[in-house]
Length: 313
Length: 177
Ligand code: SF4
Ligand code: SF4
Image 1 (cartoon, chains in turn yellow, blue):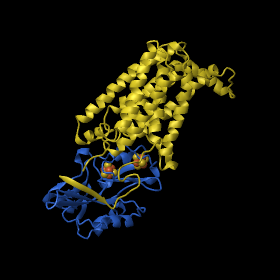
Image 2 (cartoon, chains in turn orange, red):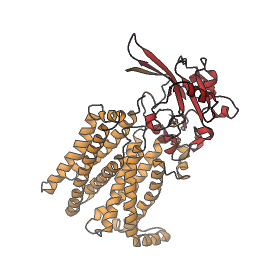
Image 3 (cartoon, rainbow over the protein chains, first blue to last red):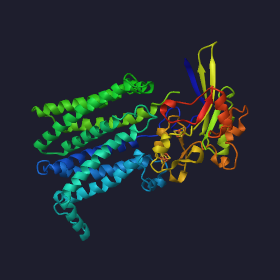
Image 4 (cartoon, rainbow over the protein chains, first blue to last red):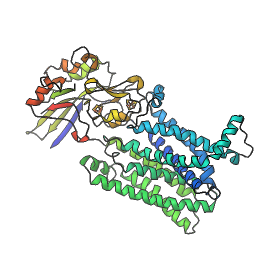
């Protein structure tokens, strides 16, 4: 029986006694990335199926948040870097094996795209808006013509971005809690749901809200299914992953995960949405706020808990 | 050429000379270390067994830290030695997350640092500082591709293990048991 394990001569900051090298910046980055992906995906989707009129908030107004979310997210990532002066090195190579690298490149494409998208709608949002430079005026006209192409690109890139927020973690085989391929789809679905919550919160149209909330209820169902799958997978896996699951099944993250993420962040808001569809009057901000909070809590818990899990030796 | 290190856990007394030698040789900042001693106590009195291991980066053949580095700062040089180029490293911490052995740390100056097998010494034909200084001579260093190297001979004659081989990293630090 292995009784005791001492590591002498080691007390390295952020590494010992257990790894804690990623702090609040990474979950915030993953949250904002997922949220932006969610809004972009649905803006693209409803543009492609020709619903700009009925789904105005989805296609137009909510997208104004996307560049803000992406820039803030990138800034959070930047804050996390410990050798910040060399930030530009991210963009001198493409390393497909490294999620961090292709994620940075995806953001490099999707961020300008979101700015252009918003620019094509700015005159509708602010009627007296004038571009000071005529070149920008002309570019806007061109961009507006290609809106449908942009919608396709946005939808595709949004999926890549949403999946990336999960793969960034799942690519690390050294952290058993993260090392599962379900994390990609799970983070994507969760990101889409937080995007929907934001749009619903902003929307004034009853029709639009009911369309979105039907989609959201389905997404939350998928999320619950994936979370169940996640734990089934862990419990049927090797010792290190069983131990990782135990953190949530009696261990130190049990209460925070099940209460804030699963119950308050998924089941309760989904119930409220269902009641709303059935005709009960429920202020939309309540389920929306809970979904956003749950999504944020989910990322904080996953990042924090994952770093504790490790290979035994 | 494939550099590797062999640690004789039966000869190691856990004196930490290797740790100090490395800190001095490589100017490791105070409070940090690139190698360390692990002491495993098995069983209960009076049937106790102790294993002492001098550990460091395993210079893995299948190194996740190199794979996940977004800038190529973590890379592999001659002999399979895994190193970090400080002025390419952005300090994202991905490689630290990816190492099953927690062999890397974030240097106070921001970049990531770890054992280099003292490649600046290897270039001069010397052994790594830890190997040179070990008073019980329990550390062996050499080329696994050469059947007559110290490491090849040690592995031929004794039982050995590597750490967490199930992590799939193909570690290149071997422990004689
Ligand atoms: S021990 Fe860790 S840092 Fe060293 S090569 Fe293996 S994975 Fe990379
Ligand atoms: S911290 Fe540096 S060496 Fe490690 S993955 Fe990031 S850029 Fe590469």
